[in-house]
Amino acid sequence: MHRLHFAIAAAALLVLLTCSRHPTPAGTGVATTTDSGATAHTAPGGGMMGHGMMGGGMMGSQNPGPQKTQSSQPSDKAITFRIASVDNSMAFDTTTLKVKQGQQVRLVFHNEATVAALPHNWVLVEPGTATAVASAGIQAGKSHDYVPDSPDVIAHAKLAAPGETVDVTFTAPKPGTYPYICTVPGHAAVMKGQLLVGS
Ligand SMILES: [Cu+2]
Image 1 (cartoon, rainbow, N blue to C red):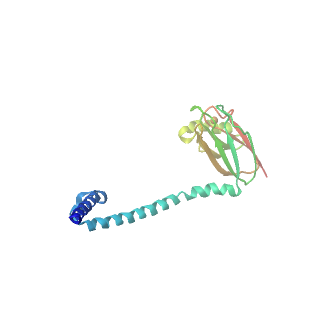
Image 2 (cartoon, rainbow, N blue to C red; image 1 turned 120 degrees about the vertical axis):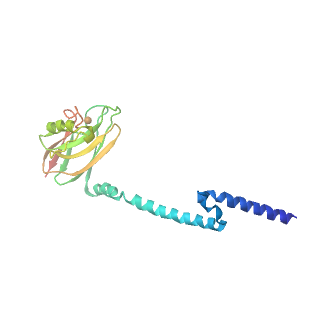
């Protein structure tokens, strides 16, 4: 008698398990008419698909590789300058940078401001062109980070919102004194510095 009850209970449990499995792998009711064996086969198949997806994901994560290469290159031979704006003012905390001609330079700029009205950028220009580039930058507008499409712009880091850090890597030009400015409207006259390039 006990064995019979156990068998019935076991059978009932099996039915419950089988029924409860159907909605999970099938999703649609199509598999309802097939036996439980078919359902069991579906699960491993789904598992294999899962592995395939993981493979794709890993390949996807390898795609940003060039970005890593970009950031590791400077550590090899580039010199890194970390500068920032000063509190909620229109000023760079570093106003003179010295490099040698042909040097790979990585400029990291942090916007220290805490008010939304003070975004900043960092723009390196040809000698004597700071005012002209700043004016053209206003014309270029915020959608272009206030940076004009001009041959007078040697390098520039994009517009940094308050609290944001941006960077740019460039090769130091021929020996000379090159102004760098923030081209956000009204800033260039006071927010500036100079890059001294030696031979
Ligand atoms: Cu600025």
